[in-house]
Structures are given as C-alpha cells and as structure tokens.
Image (cartoon, rainbow, N blue to C red; front, side, top):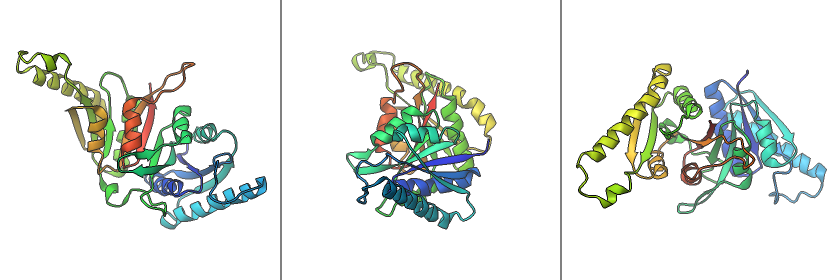
Length: 291
C-alpha cells in the first residue's frame, strides 16, 4: 500500500504548522501528503463566509495556499488536496483510514494551561485506529516546533503491564526514519505500604526497580533485534508516568503515547497519562491506538 499522510486543515496557523510538520514527515517516510478540509469544520470561520459557494471557494483557497507553503520546502513532494463533508471528526478519521497517520494542529493556552486539543481533535483520536499526531504552532505564522528540536530524540511512554506492540512499532520506525535515539519511559510509584512501613527491608525498593527494569528490557528485546541501528535509552523511573514523559520530552522531536482500543458500546477512551501529555507536551505528540 502506498504511504500517505493526511492533514486536517481549518485555515488557522495551527493547521498550517501541522501541514509543515507533515511535509517533512512525508519526505522522511517517502510518503505522499493529503491535505483535507472538512466542510463543517469551522463554527466561526476567520472570514465572513455567508453562502455555500463562498465557503467552498474559501476552503479551496486554504487548501491551495497551504499546499504552496509546504511545497516551498518540499518541492518534489506529491501533494493532493480535497474537501470532505460530514461531522468533522468522523470525516477526518475516514479520510485518514488508509494513511500512515492523521496530523492535526492544536492551540496554545499559555505555559501553565498548556495546549487546547479541541473536540474535533479529541474525537478524531477516538474515531480512528490510525496514529494521530498533534502539532503546535510556535507563532502566528504557522511554524511547527522544529528547528533545533528536530534533532532531538523520539520519546515513548509505555506500560509494561500491557502489550503495546503498535506503539513500539510506530516509535521505533520514527526513530529509524529520523536517525535519532529512542527514549522509552516506564514511570512507576512504590507500593503505598512503603510509605507507612519504614522498617521494611532496605533493599526492597532496589529489588522492585530491578524487576521493572528487567521487564522493560524484555519488552524491548525483539524491537532491538528488528531495529539494530536505533540507539535505545530505556528508563524505569520512579514518579508519575505523565510527569516523567513530559520531563524527558522537553527537547524531543516527537513524543509517542498510546490509547487502548476498546471495541465496546462505551466507545474509545483516552487515558489520563495520554491526556496529560497531549495537553502539556510542547513537542509534537503522536497518539497510537493499540490492543
């Protein structure tokens, strides 16, 4: 199957940043770029659009302008543009069904509040089993957080209690494409009893740490064999997992977190760790669905 990356556009700087980031990603993967505008995306468009025809002309202009921006840095890249209709989250998820990933822009809320992943982005993540990458704009010009950061590592958060082959496959492929190290984080906290029982054997904390490190190494062993050129920094760190991932991701080229696929009437679920990383990591964040 030909490789393709799909980008959702809404005419705002954040989506331009997403397209620019995706252009470089497509070049790394030898993929084409598919720029998509969902007709019902905008509740409050930046221009006074009053008729269906005017909305279509505006959307066509957004698609054309963004493709030209990407083409400036990637002149040989195959770029397609299209409009899709329907509920924006479902329309984008459907448009990305055969893609390597769906890339969306997110809006900054300040250093304390973090970033806003709107309902379209959150629902699109829940609606697709394709990886979804969230990209922030560093300015009003739609520039993604690349530059020097692009030489940083790929950081992946894992849970050794559950298999996450889809997440690891994506993280290793990204590190391989970029020729950069892969940092794998498994955050853990000591059992609550250790807070109330100072007389416990002094070495018990070290024993737990050793066991978790061994389990993490076992999880990564087949991936080391499959990607022998990828340098791996595996960390079983004490502390809240989201904090550990965010701390390691400060200079990362990409952060990879997961969500478990739940095929039930309740629907998809984005866990608290992934939710925190999505809203507070300054690097692009890939959310990978896995069993």
